Image (cartoon, rainbow, N blue to C red; front, side):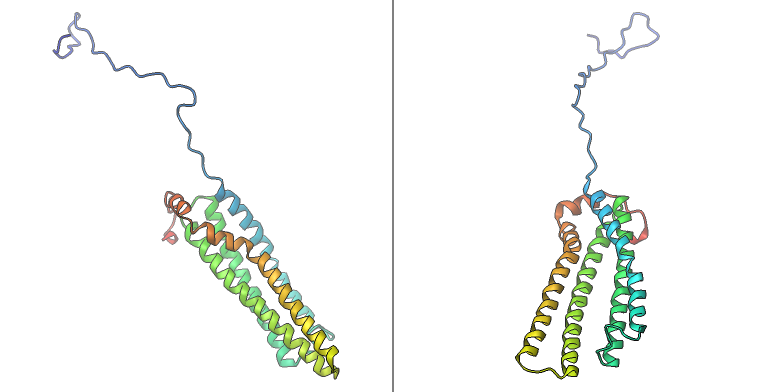
Length: 213
């Protein structure tokens, strides 16, 4: 074989042979599939945030009941009654703000935006903290409310102590069970986004705005 370069103007010259490319077998080229977990977590979060927006109606209902002549708070002292309603309103407004933040994080998660990697754990941490405070408040208020009722009724003896203890235990157990259900999703989000494999996936996503840092 001649090492001279191919002259296309020479009719006797032969063009160089191109390297043979082996045929591609069916299925030899693997198509990388997009992970499905952002869609699942994002859709669940959007549904939960939609239910959370019902807290607006909860605030309105709380004040409506409070303004009734015979309301569940009527057995409390006026200062204690107003303090309870105001505190519940503050908690509801905070939960409403967290629902908005969750909705933003889930939308970015569905779009595979890297900002979701910081928004979702932040939301989960804040929600867990506020939810625990809310349950503690409800338990304390229940205890003070029952104590005030027993004092105003003038009842005494072992029966009073038993009923009061049972009411407090019921409030504590109910609060803990409700807290476990409320924290199921945020705890999962917090643990999931702490995984190294998930962090590595999120790092490959584009940063679409200045809030992603």
